[in-house]
Image (cartoon, rainbow, N blue to C red; front, side):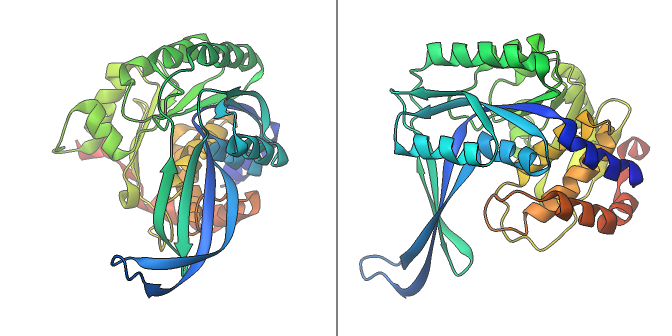
Length: 334
């Protein structure tokens, strides 16, 4: 455990880049006192709004919360929401020199309606028309330049148009820093040779084309890792935890089975701690257990909120040994 705590202390020495889809998260908090006479839906009287960084910016915020230095690369629209998002990122210490403002696009906004401590509805404003080819080329060039001084790069893909197969291939091939990928549904063939790829179970099913897995799921994970020559593969399965493989280590790491308040941001926390942990000298296994603990904290919070360093250290001390007892080495299952 001391090795893990020492690695957490080294997070503040790391410098990372997060490239991907930037979003503004809006949380509208209110009360529900009646059902609408127009339709069988609750009427929410909004009392206040909170504005938070979302998407790839939330991953960057996680890294900042643990003490790392972070640059983000992506785009926002030339609008009020884009200006607010840039201001929020700067106020939290995120470096925004690689954020491009695009006249022809609108900033992505996700508005969550909250009442009685629960999310009732999410409203998304998205502009997915790809009219930013030259801007994306500039973003890519800047990422490659800045990668020379980075300890890691996280590609954070929400399938909102910023990333494409060419960007994946170029970043993975050109960056001297290890590339960690949090993918969506496309471009898996472009992720060959990545340092780490972390799909969730639904994304993994689409990538493999397998609708129903039989036998040892770890075998399917290892087969896919070999096929794309990915150094480390992590497949998350929600309440079941995660499956990891790098050829030498093939494990099922269970979740902490805490009371789930809100799963928003759990995947962002996992990729954040995988990148920080392995960049600080932890093995895939050690970083994955740490990420499981971090995600266990995240799901107890409302919305995407950073886990603090102190929270993480406390939970490592409380949960590390117990979690290790439940880990299953899948090679032993045959």
